[in-house]
Amino acid sequence: VVLSKDEITRYARHLILPQVGYAGQRKLKTARVLIVGTGGLGSPVALYLAAAGIGTIGLVDFDVVDATNLQRQIVHSESTVGVPKVESAAARLRDLNPYITINTYSEPFTSQNALDILAQYDLVVDGTDNFPTRYLLNDAAVMLNKPMVYGSIYRFEGQVSIFGTKEGPCYRCLLPDPPPPHLVQSCAEAGVLGILPGTIGTLQATEAIKLILGEGEPLIGRLLLYDALDMSFDLITLPKRPNCPMCGESPTITTLIDYEDYCGMPAHADSEFQQGRLHNANVPEMTVQQINERIAAGEKIVLVDVREAGEVNISRIPGALHIPMSQLDQRQDEIPRDQPVVMFCRAGIRSLKAIQTLQAAGSDNLTNMIGGITAWAQEIDPSIPLY
Image 1: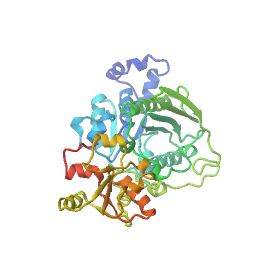
Image 2: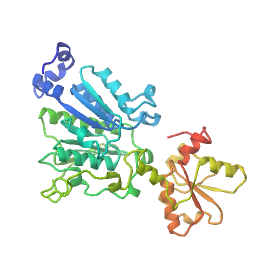
Image 3: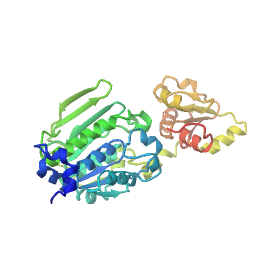
Image 4: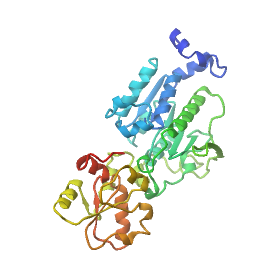
């Protein structure tokens, strides 16, 4: 593999680094890196790896670009809203660096295709935003002996490490079991500082390049913790667990499993698991059209909004009673039991959980609004902002 005259000019600032040089740039050109997720983390990772001259980059994502992504997912733009994310990202990367190859996989990353896709690459960067895909990615990486550059973000905090190497731990050493589904909030529910994935994603790209070059001390066996509010970085030692079922001395996980079932949560919005999660046989439900028609007919229906205060400041349905999920236990008595009550949140998941909690306490007059205030804004009142 040789560098063309134009490539030498392009990568000049790399070539004069002793730790990179001509030989190192050739390593980058022949490297094959898979990025799973082209959202908040995948955006800066993809941009910087493409700019650095990684010869082949694979992009996996089943989502399309949404306007709410643009606050942080910088590989996309207003002109690509509605376009599959891998196509949007690939076009931007090819424009940034025409000397590299971009492979796209506009499909869910599942137990059925994970090993086949990952086997084609030298290492994988974790740009996921859910536990089922992250456990799947970890297990596939360990099985194929491929390093996994891990990154995670939540509100103002982030983590970075490297899993899947023979000498280091895997993700199951950090988190042996997934957290209970009711404790897990997505970015859409919890929010995230738009710059945060840029910080964490850039660190992930740095670690990927270090692994390819064989330079520096990669974050194997160490977990980097970042707090944007304190502007603090902390490093903690993360040992390999001898009894880890995936990478330990006597592994018990030898095949990929159903990770949505294992984690009790969906891997993407269109998964069959997600649809089942939003529709529960024990919880009555109505569409926004049905609710609106009954209200228009004069029926006295109490609407209860279980979103948090910050969300209600963004959008609200006039007349709705606001009882955040975080206050539900203390304010149950405010919810009438002698007339129909319709509960809603952003998309219908938290309100479903709220109804299940109240049903366990004896309430039987509760109905879930399918699609939440998002569906209400789209179908009933377009003046309500989407978020």
